[in-house]
View 1 (cartoon, rainbow, N blue to C red):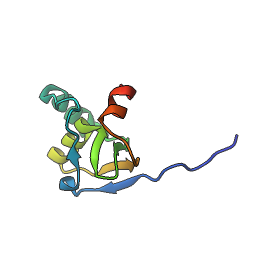
View 2 (cartoon, rainbow, N blue to C red):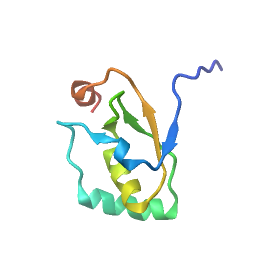
View 3 (tube, helix red, strand yellow):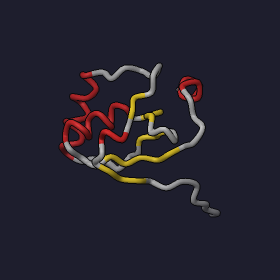
View 4 (spheres, rainbow, N blue to C red):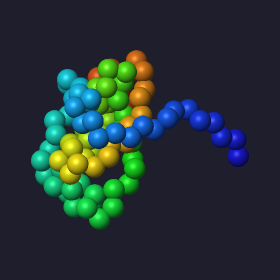
Length: 90
């Protein structure tokens, strides 16, 4: 099998480095409650996706949960993504 590294996964607890992307879905408190229960058992290192401005394209619930629980945030950066790309992906 051919493999190619296409991105790097970073880890931080600098929650304020990230910004919510205007126009993206709002954070649902009920979803945060469910994620907190799940993360208390085991936090899988599934990265959030941000653009070069550190705006969260995907994973705002994981980010909010990690922030509330003081857990590491895993993330990848994909340049040149906008809200239009997020809408198309969803």
